[in-house]
Structure formats: C-alpha cells, structure tokens
Amino acid sequence: MLSELLEKLAQGLDARDVPYMVIGGQAVLVYGEPRMTRDIDVTLGIGPEGLAKVEDLMLTLGLTTLPESPAEFVHQRMVLPCKDEESGFRIDFIFSFTPYERQAIERARSVQVGNTKVRFASPEDLIIHKMVAGRPRDEEDVRGILLKTSVDVPYIENWLRQFDQALGRGTLERFQNLRQSIHKRW
Image (cartoon, rainbow, N blue to C red; front, side, top):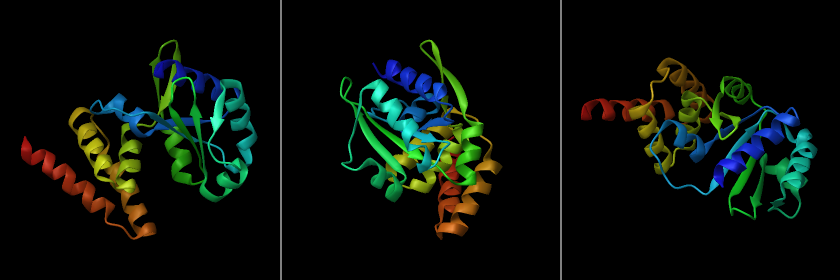
C-alpha cells in the first residue's frame, strides 16, 4: 500500500512538473535502519504560489486536507498536511524557498518503487535535515545512515556550519560527536 502511494505521488508530481524529494522516515528506510513510520514527507521545489498544483494532485489522488484553511496554513507554515484515507498515511507537502532546499532537490536520487522512479533526498541531505531537526529519533536515524551508507562528510559539514551560523545552534558539533561515537564502537 505504501509503495503504491509513493508511486502515485511521484507520478502526480512529475505530471505537474513539480520538482520534489521524499525526506523523513521514508527516506531513512532507503539509506538507514528500518523503522515504523506512518507518514510521508515531501519537500516540493515550489513555494506557496504553487499551492493550486498540489491541491489538484490531492483531488486527483483523493487526499483529504487536514487544515480548515489550506492557503492560510501554507502561507503561515510552508507545509500542507493531508491524509490518504485508504491507507491512513499522513502526507506533508513542504513548500521550499531556500537555495539549500532547491539544491537538495536537484541532488535527490531516483529509487525504483514498483514501476516508478521516486525521488528521495540524498543521504547527505537527509542527514542535514535530521541534524537540523535535532530530535533524539532524528539522531538515531543519522546513526543508522552513517553505519550503512557512505556519505560526503565535507558537504554535510559545510551545510551544517551554515545552518549553525544562521540559526545559532551547535548542529555541526553534534554531528561530529555522533560520527566519533560510531567510530569508537568499531
């Protein structure tokens, strides 16, 4: 059921010329340790001005919008949460506007899901997303990715350094400590 939904989303976004990448738990399943997740996070290569394309896709796929006022919600939060009633999966369409997000979408990797190529965030960009989010579950996901997948560490560190400067966080240091803890175990 999940594979079919990912295929439909990818086909629908491609048909509407909306660049995208799947992030979050579904992307972790591609590069890291398997875990249970009942949602799909999709970063879109469009801003809120592209909401009509997403609403058209939702209508075509029979997805239910969760906020009462979708346009207002998207303009305030840059995300449109919806639900696939058939599977029970929640889908968050995340509207992007930063140069980093646009670059990450360009770097996304096509992965065969059923009969369709679905674009997933690269492992490096997934790690960046997870480290910036900074929840314990995200750091565990990063640990699993680092244990299973070879990554471009300088690329990750460059972007984390930039996010730290913009957000005033210690994301780069947490990433470096996480990497060191993995190397100490082996």
